[in-house]
Length: 403
Image 1 (tube, one colour):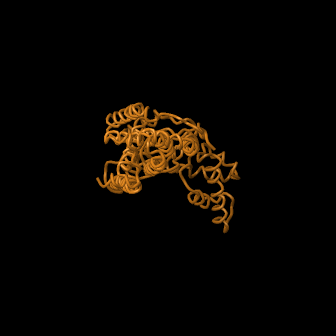
Image 2 (tube, rainbow, N blue to C red):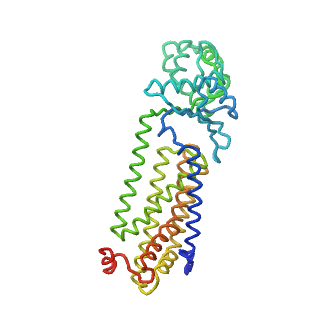
Image 3 (tube, helix red, strand yellow):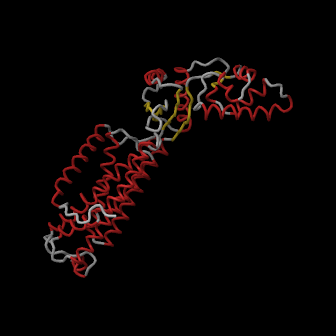
């Protein structure tokens, strides 16, 4: 399938526009990074606590923020969770960067957030637990002590099964939040069971869905390893392309990949997406994807350089890009549609990861013909070889490399 059977686009004639566009994106990204003091690292890299809280209604963001400030943790950030798949998820992520060291500091951060939430949003009742924060074991234990069904010797097994049924109803049918214990009748709880639960539990209008804690030392080490892994990947690709083609091709490809990564990081800063381990995985995927597309174009340039020896080098490059244009649209277009759906409907957890892939595919595909290829042409013009084509991998090309 071909979209353009005889495309005749002068890509190299538009190189200055590609450079201008890339320069603009790089300047905007760098300006955002500088103004914000660097990338916005997630908990994976900077260490701290993330608490995922779900509410029975729209989250009271201002109330939560004031409550956290009263507890001395006003430096925490509150991020609403919303996407196309769950436009009314009623969830927020509370991020607290931990400055201290050790498990005590991390536990203190977690406790501070939870205490602030309960103090601000749920006064509770003395001597009772929040029903939305307990597991089936606590429910079974409370029912066994009260024995509202007069189960006698079989109380342990019977209430264990009933507790699992009640908690499953809360988590699956009510999204983890029960605002009134009488609602548990939908799970098969009798009035006597509900009354017994009321003696041990109270209900709030929110629930803690998940808590993640990462130490600052672990985050720093992960950040260092992520940088090293990325540099190793680029170095390996440079060596491979230099061996497969010529060193100038490898240098152009690596510069194009650096261009892709810098623009992606800049857009992350502009749109305030955090950089986590999953984003690093996406960036490495972007590096491989962009490099693959660049190698396809370079390979076609090498083939055409043998067949079109009398043509100027920039004409050969234009022809090569036009010949691979349909392939680029098919592969990049289909992949882009897939990651776009992931970005729109994948949820908050995958939002930053999918955003990196969406941007990476667009920028990586563009840099293959808009940055990498023009750099090779510019190098040949600077060496005065635009008219006298030397195909990489040929005897003449090998002679040039020796000189």
